[in-house]
Every structure is written in structure tokens, then in C-alpha cells.
Amino acid sequence: MKKILSVLMLLLLSISIYAQQNVTKFLGIPVDGSKTAMIQKLKEKGFTYNTTTDFLEGVFNGEEVYIRIQTNKNKVWRIAVGNKTGRRDEGQIKIMYNKLFQQFEDNSNYTISKTSHKLSDSEDISYEISVNNKQYAATFYQLPYEGAQNRIVWFTIVKEYGEYYIMIFYENENNASHGEDL
Image (cartoon, rainbow, N blue to C red; front, top):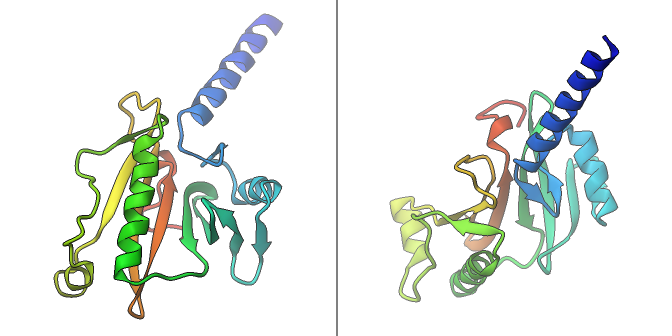
């Protein structure tokens, strides 16, 4: 009986370890588990938690950012990263978008979705966003991909009060909320 219990415990442990390895990671932390545990892990990485706004704040990729942890049924499914300061004009945001795109493209830990591309210099993003409701976004998958679409990282341009910033999302589709606990 002890042997059976030991084997079952090892099996459950290996399934748990595999599940954590098969999800998107943000700063090496699996996008999974409880919000409280994620906040603690991000605090250990140097971010500070603001209980009033429910955001973490700190530096990511050379920018001052806010981080929001989104959950579904008390499990983390998305880390949303947005600029805290330094909103950009149209020209600056194109450069920032293309630079971020290039960073992901050059990183061997990611593969690009077939529909994602850089912005051209001639792209009139202000017109396209305002008039045609176009969303500029690029999607990457963390490797090893293994055919599962639960290791997603994507970013998009957001326009607010005539200025632009980029939001980056690290998602665990296994825990996806699609409307709950946001």
C-alpha cells in the first residue's frame, strides 16, 4: 500500500512540474497559481505592490511599468504590463513597437505567429485606430511550443488622450478567464 501511495505521489508531482513548465513565464515565473503567490514572486524581483490600485510597479525592459495580475477562479491567467510614464506620439510608438517586435524576433525562446509583422514607416496608425478601429498587435509563443497555444505573449498599441503606449500580455490559456475575475 505504501508503494502505491508513493508512486501516486510521484506521479502527481511530475504532472504538477510538467504543468508549470508548459505555461507562459514572465521573468522566469510561471503565469499560474494564486494571485498572492504571484505578487510575492514579483516583489522578490524588485516590484512594489500598491494595494490601492491593485497594481505592481517597477522597471521592465528599461521602462517604468504597471503590472496587473488577472485571475480566473483564483488562478493567474494573465500578466498585463503597461507603461507607467513616457507616453509616446505616433512616430515614437512605431519605433517602440518595432524595437519590441525585433527583441522578441531575435530571442530564441520565442517563435512568431504568422499574422504578426512590424509597422512600416508609412503606416498611419492614428487614422487606422481612430477611423477603422484597427488594432496593432504582435503575437509570439514561448518555446518549447509543442503545438499547445498556452504559452502566449502578445503586445498591442493603445491610444489614450491622443498619446500612445504599449501593453504586453503574458497569458496562460489553460487558466483563461474570458470575462471572469478581471
